[in-house]
Image (cartoon, rainbow, N blue to C red; front, side, top):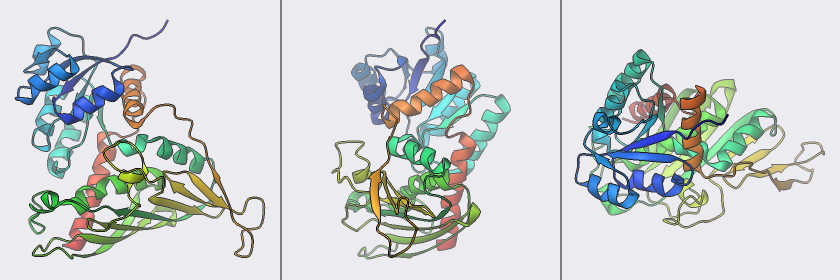
Length: 339
């Protein structure tokens, strides 16, 4: 006997929920939108969902198996807490700028209430990352020795205008965006034992750094260098290599390389460079092949399928609240090293 479809509700009717609905509405049963703000009416109209001011109001009309929190950073904690209080499994789509302390409290509350709390670190669900993790786990590149991550992506003046580095206030692109790079590195390579970095800035009249060089040591002695800049024009950053949206150019290149004793795998293009059956030596001839991704769905659908499996089958999530906290802590640790 097949399981019924999981009933999901959105908390927050802004752009994030609308994009999820657009990508996933054919696969999931979205039953309600909770949003007391002016954005709620527009979101409900666009998604053709009944609108409620509170989750408890929505629960009076619908059976809701899980909620997706798609609010701004200012509202994320309160909205997530409301779902936990109703004993409903919760998937939080992260907003850059949510505080570490408040997030830690939320994770503790979820654990105490025994309610699943997931965080939508969506890059983990990209087909190339899923394929890379499986390939690495099977020993496809041998023993991992090193990795290199590049995020050169010029930001607009609007994104750089409200930065207050010393007080950690405002949108700080280089660190806010870095959490996604660090999270996927943790997912593929394990926990970070040491982290350090240096910064520079070429921005006129702004003391905030705009470029960063970072050195990480992972468990199993894997070394990774990460280079990020808010000013460099480049083909090497996640946004233009992953091809997830038409908002950005699509370069078909890669921004992450993981090197082992049997080969180097680039992501997201999934090119494997190796010597094949020949001895690994600098005077042998390198060859390249593409490894296959078995994922038939995009990141958004894969993420919600994981959420559905947690709800229906009680499986361990790909990214729990506690797991996401470790990525937030890593950014804070780097911030402390740079301040």
